[in-house]
Image (cartoon, rainbow, N blue to C red; front, side):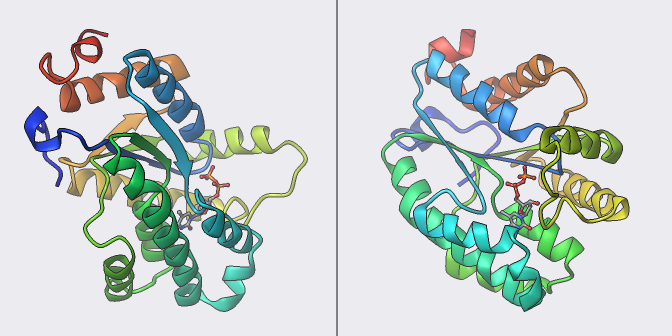
Length: 232
Ligand code: TYD
């Protein structure tokens, strides 16, 4: 259950689930790494995971969809592949970790399906909702950090990172696709402010990290829940 400022009592014992979302080159993996280190610094154990993938079964599906195989099957079937991967990932990795009190930082989660397959792939909301119900049920992130960068900046960063390697299934889409992607994420952030935060990711990584940390501090840490984190 998500609230803007959960009380220590409501969440005692359970880890926090934070997903990171954004378009190509938005810097998700850099920010996740910094956040995991920062949480460790205040004695909070976090696992870093990703979608599609994050569990052995889901990693096999990742390989399949990013190779472009899913595209050949058509949008609905490709969405089913992402859903199957998420089902395995949620059941075998995310839920057990949260139950043990471990924090989970996931590079992408269900908003990626809403944006890539829904807003851009035109898969009907009814299909997306049905898949979500049978895969993750009520599981949703306590916080979703949406890293926002102008399309040109994101694509330049992604190209620099890739070097001479070939663009994957989604990186090879055109600029218009990436603009729609950005718009779709911004809509989610505007529609669900209690769960999502839109972070300007054009800034220096250290500044972006500081902004994310300040959101966590406001939402999760009070002096009674974690005094080290509240004062960090
Ligand atoms: P990845 O190499 O992890 O890229 P990124 O650094 O952008 O996260 O590739 C994952 C790709 O899969 C990415 O382009 C988004 C896409 N994707 C979907 O289309 N639907 C989904 O549900 C998920 C989780 C990812």
